[in-house]
Image (tube, rainbow, N blue to C red; front, top):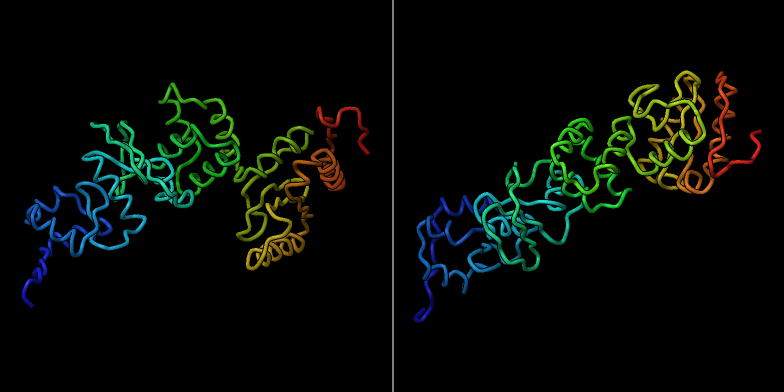
Length: 310
């Protein structure tokens, strides 16, 4: 029909590159792919979406990954995703609404949803993101303690042992939370995998002189435990909820049954016990341990000083 703009054919090599970048391209990539600025202008009017000056989405609604690629392309060569965006790509935490971008050579003005910082970081992956260990250390500067425990535990689960993170921390002499990180890494290295488990370790077990449990070990089958007092046939399970739901509930039930079949006593506690009644909780665990052969004696913590153990 007269007056219509002919549809532009995008070279197949450029389309493959776009597909490999979640359907996002930079102006430099488009020009290198054989199209001119005039053609780019036409495509923005008819087919493409300009996400920012010089960065285009070939899809009308870019994906989360596409927006991540856009930030990296805006920041230029050597740039990478960092902080929560990198943590999401490492499967450490949920996807954030904003994208932190590290750029080594130039400062780019931040604009939603991108926050640019001029720092050099080693990068891995596609799109490039900070390494798993560096992602954890960068996030640790601002995370609250319980969130940081979860982050460290997730990193260990993704293949970064606590010792590896500790070694990387030693190479950052000015990390603002060195002492806290060192303490948490010691706990995670000993098998702590959640804030609740850490509170149990310090408020209940350590504060009252109970024996040191094995953590993330399996008394029977493939069922790892939160705290296993192997010598005294006792297991302590810590539930973030009053009781798990759905498949998790049946998994825990099967685990408890297997422990009972093996002659183990299983005690189950939650947040309110561990945070609000740690002394009572310690007394009850101590009584079971004593019945099963423990010859030690629990001691008072500052919270329960003056109370009589029975």
